[in-house]
Image 1: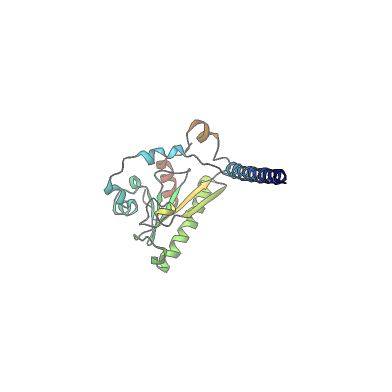
Image 2 (image 1 turned 90 degrees about the vertical axis):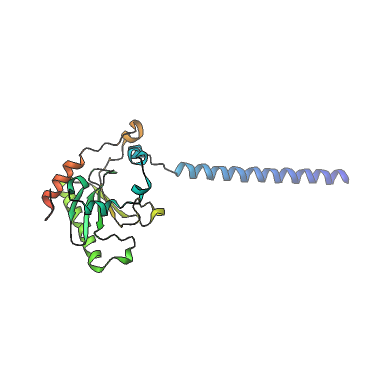
Length: 203
């Protein structure tokens, strides 16, 4: 009688152990599947931005307001000044033709924009897409606003939209194998082409 109970307990223990092993295998397979779906985007060409020395005063400075306050628009990469909006070339572009569209006024919150600012900002984005279509013939665009530092805004105090032209194949083997990003056009050359086509822009 006692031997029968012992055998039953052992059988139950073996059954529970097999269930535990099965559960662990399922969990591991799920983790492996999730890991295989996770893609990592490496951007070593951004190293010059990441490693550039940054002082406390520089980190607090608004480069948009600083550029607008300056007198050398080409040096400050100010492409177009409008009554309520402005267009900059991105000094550290993700891709050829990377532009920043921002309000003239230093504002960090969408709700603070006036109706006139909202209209002109959206119109400016649309017009810059048309200009880049004509000059660069991209296959598509990434257009977006990072609202707040936690969302990735490098300048959280001054709203700005990123306008990035995209081409089929622009993400290729170069960044992966050679740790290099090919930017085929200089900022100065693009600046000259854009200001020629924008009303009131100063070259």
